[in-house]
Amino acid sequence: MTIQWFPGHMAKARREITEKLKMIDVVFELVDARIPLASRNPMIDEIVSSKPRLVLLNKADMADPAITAEWERYFREKGIATLQIDSQSGKGVGSIASKARELVKDKIDKMIQKGMKPRAVRALILGIPNVGKSTLINRLAKKNIAKTGDRPGITKKQQWIKVGKELELLDTPGILWPKFEDQIIGLRLAATGAIKDELLDFQEIAVYVLKFLKERYPERLKERYKLESIPEDVIELFDEIGKKRGFLQGGGWVDYDKTAEIILRELRSEKLGRLTLEKPDDYE
Ligand code: G4P
Image (cartoon, rainbow, N blue to C red):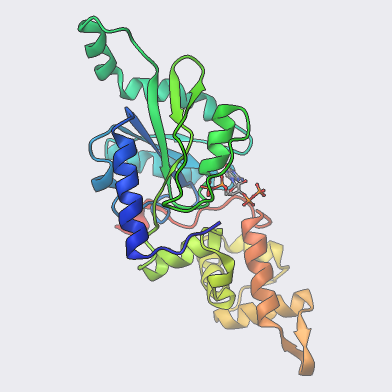
């Protein structure tokens, strides 16, 4: 479920996360591997500056592996630890606990030096809506933890989920808002399904997606829609896909709504293969 964010919601979400940060050692920042920067909160660095952070590139199963490797390098160069995961199948999830432990090693070593008994590392999952927070919590908990009506401000008693002996996780994630003010970022979020569909103009997003596919994945576009060549003009391309699929209405006109919906649905369900909508150098 996607939240409509208002300034009051944002302030409250931020306050709640600041409170949660007091209880934990490390933050797991969940991002969508298909849009690793577009799916980050714009104030994340400032909000969690006091804690070590592990960026989890979730939905890596849907992303282009070569570009995910570029993103890993990008974060590494900034001194941020990352891990590729697929919370749905569980791939990569088994490495989270040991990676978290590495990040708080100094803190734990100091505790031991002071004669304190070492304890499990405490973590909080943070991310924008639909990035996969609940799926990951359930995967780590190895059971279904009820979703707290995915809205900021709805709280219940916090509980710790034990993940093996070494890790404890807060059972409710921190939910933050995306960077929706930027148009391109908004389109990337919409294309991947991070924004509630009812709020979207499908045709605008489909045009964006077609431009993107034409530039980055032209062969897949040709193959999927059985095109001999890709028209220069993106509206012509839209038209051709509609005709190929037989989405015509009265007078032989292409039904753009239906065509747009199919293009988006196929992109999101990997009918066009694993792909990533942004590269690190798009931001240079
Ligand atoms: P949230 O708590 O952050 O809001 O996200 P949530 O876990 O509800 O996940 C949002 C959608 O993303 C879900 O799909 C979920 O199955 C899917 N998802 C989460 N992690 C992964 C992943 O690593 N790989 C893939 N391929 N999908 C992932 P949905 O269509 O909304 O629901 P459903 O079809 O699973 O029922």
